[in-house]
Image: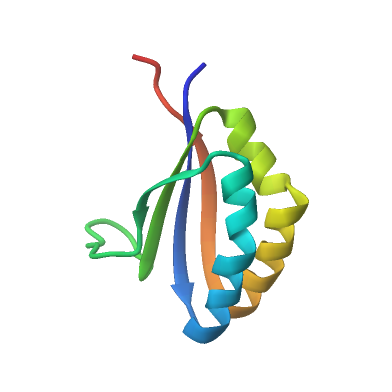
Length: 97
């Protein structure tokens, strides 16, 4: 079964308020075995519009990635995030090698 990833691109409008999202999302990420591969840090938009914050999160499977996103814990965190940031999240299945 291939791994899967969340790829999130975010512009944070209120850094203090966004901290509430980070805290609220942590239980969902822990529950579904999320592993952060990239979180913030330097980035360069080389094609198309970029966002200030880019995050890549690894999951053991697409089921885990989907279940994390749809979990009550993450849906609560999402409601906080949407108050303080704009962005997109896509779930992507890895290529099996």
